[in-house]
Amino acid sequence: MSRSLQGAIGVFDSGVGGLSVLRAIRAAFPNEHLVYVADAGHAPYGDQSEAHITQRTLAVGNWLAQQGVKGITIACNTATVVAAKTLREQTHLPVVAIEPAIKPAVALTRSGVVGVLATTQTIQSAAVAKLVALYGADKRILLQACPGLVEQVERADLHSLQTEALLRQFISPLLEQGADTLVLGCTHYPFLRDSIQHVAGEGVVLIDPAEAVARELMRRLADSDLLSSQTEPGTVTFFTTGDVVQTHNAVTHLWGSSVVVQALPIS
Image 1 (cartoon, rainbow, N blue to C red):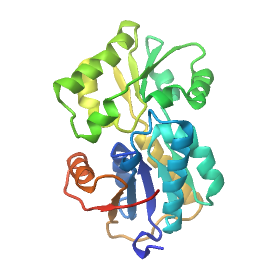
Image 2 (spheres, rainbow, N blue to C red; image 1 turned 120 degrees about the horizontal axis):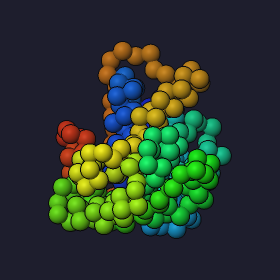
Image 3 (cartoon, helix red, strand yellow; image 1 turned 30 degrees about the vertical axis):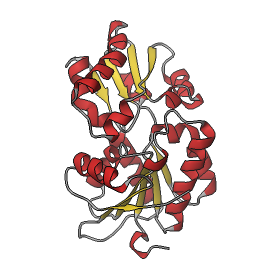
Image 4 (tube, rainbow, N blue to C red; image 1 turned 45 degrees about the horizontal axis):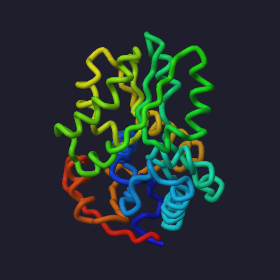
């Protein structure tokens, strides 16, 4: 067990997209120690089989548990809809997971049409179908798979013509059908927020559930009396199962400051 991770909050994603959730958690828990795992050696999850996604979710989640973290956040919509239930069954820790924010989007839409931008696997999942059935009975919920966007964020390629062309390809059909609210259903997508807003127009509302995840994490840790009492700022430790240099460059760009990224060989 790594002493430095004992009592930290574990956060993981298939790559660097979950940094959008880590950012919200950092704002909510400035005095907690955080550890982030980018499973970049097995990314992206969004176009993989359910068996592969479940195996990776359990591999990373169980590794975090073995290091002594006090709670785990799945900062990946695809891993949530495919494997969160299985991870919860295998660990005694609080496990908080992100999912596409369809419920708040339905409450906010004025046109009655909501677009959901997500990975192929998330869009096709039973969990999303359940969310649509629960909250979208009297609304139109348009599910849009966005292959290629995760890879653009992993390369920190946020504002290129190629990225904008992909966004227009995915967003334009939703706008043509009257969508006035777009759910950012992948944790990579908030890093494209400015570009998405530019393509969608200022009148379209974008919904990112990261802050709601941080609030739920706070509630779960408080209920279990696991919140830190320390007053000094907590640390943030970064690991990757992929290329350390590539992940370091992407994390530094997206996190906004230079960080140390350590290699983590989890098979």
